Length: 88
Image (cartoon, rainbow, N blue to C red; front, side, top):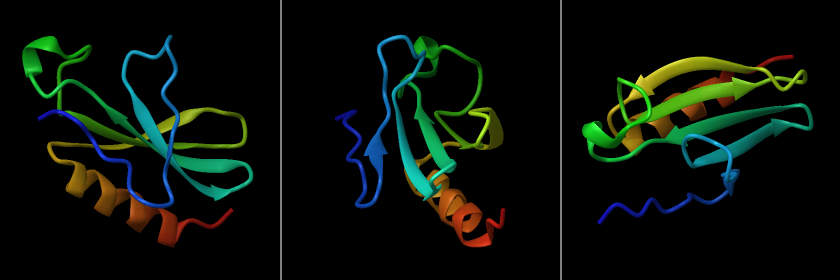
């Protein structure tokens, strides 16, 4: 019941040392949008807050938080808005 399907065009970027699983959508060769996925149950989450965090990873591999969301649909909507408005 807590399985997240990775949408077309996205890749799993989860790594064993990360606090949360993640998936990314590449904007260009140096930039990607990442959605971090925390536990469904707030009591189990690594951080206080919403379940999905959207961030942009820039060419220096810095993550810039772009919003926290309750649902995957909201996070994906924000990610696509960021992708469509991105200019380097």
